[in-house]
Length: 237
Image (cartoon, helix red, strand yellow):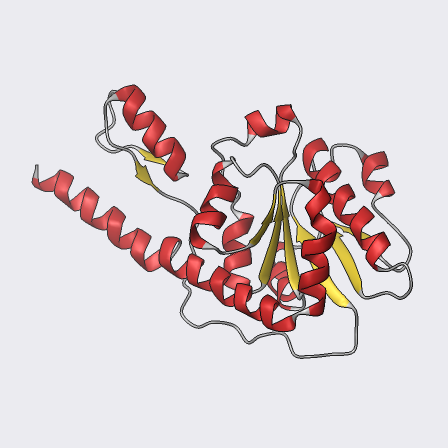
């Protein structure tokens, strides 16, 4: 397919570079996109606990990463409930592991929700959680991958807490753009989460950074323009 294609696309910068070197042809980055026309309003100050939301599938690696987060929340909430985690997932690899994520008053599993309800769930969050597994199998699996839900997170303009292997392409993208609080070591989760809970200005700053990352790298207008120009050039040839 690569040999016969006039244009080749990949989903991450890392894969574009590796495949271009391997196959001797240019590769262009193409991901899910959104309009990014106007930044959504920031969450309003409230007396409720800080709300963390995870939306996406749950394989073994992601479930284990969320368990580290739940453990940190249990310590942070030892005296009073200051933050809560809401998990929405339609595909669950191990129901027993997911059940262990549920702690009364602290973390909740809501199962699947319709796609048209996800934006309102994101809008109600203070922090959106992104995870990838930290075990070797997960590291190899996600080395060059990019989750489409990150684009949804960017569009929601909410602070992103990302837990996973920092060498993975998706987390490298977040680090390059400074678009999320990235945690590669489980021992750092509690302190970084504590900072986010205590400092609303920090959450607001990273919400804006997430939005700007989406606007710069995942704009549907920019991607359509790129596709149009590249396909038009083929017609001229």
